[in-house]
Image (cartoon, rainbow, N blue to C red; front, side, top):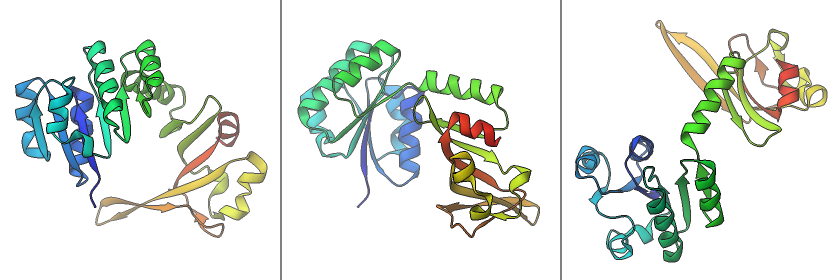
Length: 222
């Protein structure tokens, strides 16, 4: 069965989430008060409805109570965002993800029981800053103030060694959770992913490692 989602609020963030879910063959209901935003996305999603997101009766008529996840992406009106979350909680929605416009808004959403609070502008700013400070890190996902998942080119010291022979876990406390392999066919760059690689898998020159560990240990490896 396809997973079902509802996206409330079609700003840049909400529209991008809705379109990405739809492209992944998910059922997506989108809701916004702006007629033009609804018309622009209607052909790409399962159902697009122009309505007030804090109208519980209208939400039920749209079938929102039947979806697996609701993403609340109301950015301009903090009060509407909070009221929408309160209504969704009362409706018994299984999982609610909500966009926060600032830290106070995020704390309020968390206290209301939102399963995941997203700060898209802040998170993107942090990613850009990290990429400037440590350009050798291709991607950086912060799990906690101490732990991260980082994507980085395989260090030269690890080339042509098996994961077991690198001894990364013992020496650095780091786990390789995936290897991205790059190669070229007919002048076209391709890539494949080796998720949860085996101890006997060998690291090559052009590989990209996805590692999990403390920021301190990852920095030592770099």
